[in-house]
Image (cartoon, rainbow, N blue to C red; front, top):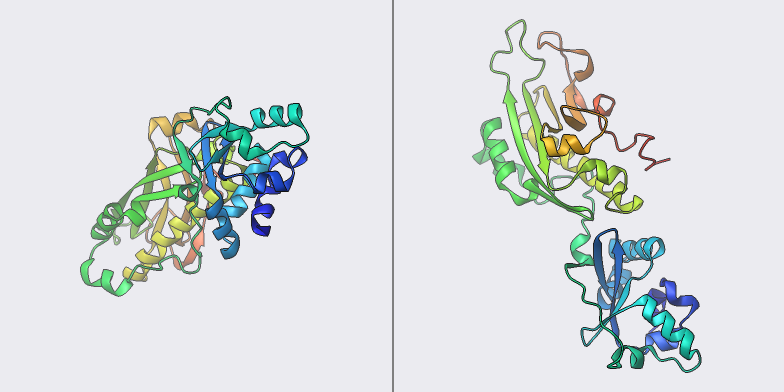
Length: 310
């Protein structure tokens, strides 16, 4: 009961409804509306999240603080708007019982469609220092012999072709260029170049918090960075001592048109194992440790215009 009250204390109705009336109601979930998305947080899931101290309850706190509670869901499947509950409380004041009010035949149930379960919107960032957990490098070495085979593996494996985030699911397609003639004087500076195209989610909308909260935008930015680090770690484990460059990169018109600061392409989270910014030819480039080259990107989540980290 104490935990239930702690959860309920996050609600915008705290000023109107007593703990006892809410806690005794057979409410089993809360709906929060974030732009066009409606997300349902189930009480049992929140209780479990509190025990584990994971991201679900933290997200609930942030969402309820920023957007308020849109509606209440009870164990009969009824969904009642917060505004209707507030109005009823103001009318009845003393003796108001949330459980009885929700179950009244005269209390309207909202017709809400496309409700997302909050647990499906959580994607905990992978530890950047251990991005390849659950991937056996030894197993990959046995079946992957070329960069082209590695890219095929990335594109066929769900872990690497999709990324679930609070703003939606990124769908990735990786491509590779292999330098076949490094001895050529005008040969590109790399041995292997990997680019990751994407669709269904717009990074610019994430950066400007159009379809997510500020905290969620930061989480998504870290998830995307972790993804590139995963690709890098696996690539370098299979092809050590190679000059490799990678980044998110797209020329997709829908994505480019969504980004107001460039007309032809969008790229971000550039990384490399050679002095990428300064060398155009293979004979001039020098092998070095993995390095981020975000100063080269034309989309940066740290850009002051986006105000994410200010």
